[in-house]
Length: 283
Image (cartoon, rainbow, N blue to C red):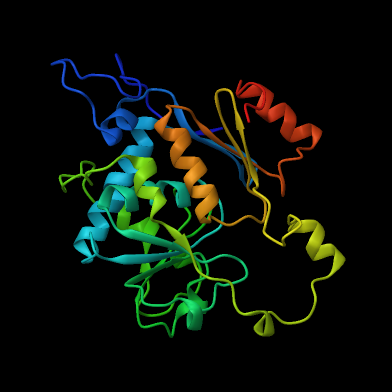
C-alpha cells in the first residue's frame, strides 16, 4: 500500500466549524478531514490513499502552479486525462483556482476540436504539441513517476515535477460558490459530427464502451452509502464523473477507483469495495 494520507487530530467533518466557531469553507472542510478522500486501486496494483488533508495539499499546490503560470478565473483549461488519483487531485486544484474546466472525451480529444482554451493538461502531450495553448504533461502512477521519463514536447511543463515545488497553502481568493456549483459549469468537448466519426464501432469496442438506447455513454461509477466507486480501467475523466466525484467529496465521503472497465464489478473488485466499507448502492 502507498499511503499518501496523514491523520489530523480533531479534524472537522464537512460543514463543521474551526476551533473559533467559524464555519469552514468547502476547501477547508476537505483539508481538515482525517479520512480517505481518494483510494486508488487502479494504479499498477498498489493501493494509493490520499486523506482529505493530502488531497487538499495537492490541490493547493496545483492552484498555486496555475496562478504562477498565469491561469486563474477567466481562464479555460482542457483536461485530457485518464482516471487516476493525480487527475482527481488536479481537478480539485482547478476548482480551487476558479478556472473553467473542459474535458476531452475519448471521442473528441483532437486539437482541432478543442475550441478556445488557455491550457491543455494531458497524459498524452505529444498529441497536443501543435496546439497554441500552454501544455502540461501529467504522468500516471506514483509520486516518483515523472512525465520527463517519456519524450515531451519542448514547451510542455512536467506537472508532477513542478507542482511539488509549490507552496502547501493556497492564499488565492476562494471561488464564492460551493464545490458542486462550480462543477455545474464544467463541460465536455462536443463530439465530432457523425460524418467525422469514422467507421462503425466494432462489437469489442461497444462492449468496452457501453451506451444507452440514445447512444450516450453509460456512467462508469456508482454511488454507495458511504462513498463513490469509479471503474477506472480505460476510463477518462469527463464531466459526469467529475461532478459525481466532487459531490461525493462535498458529502465528506471517499472516491474509490477500481481496476474495472464498468461498474458491473468482478469478484476481485467487489471484494475491494467491501474492504473499503462503502456500503451498498444508494441510487
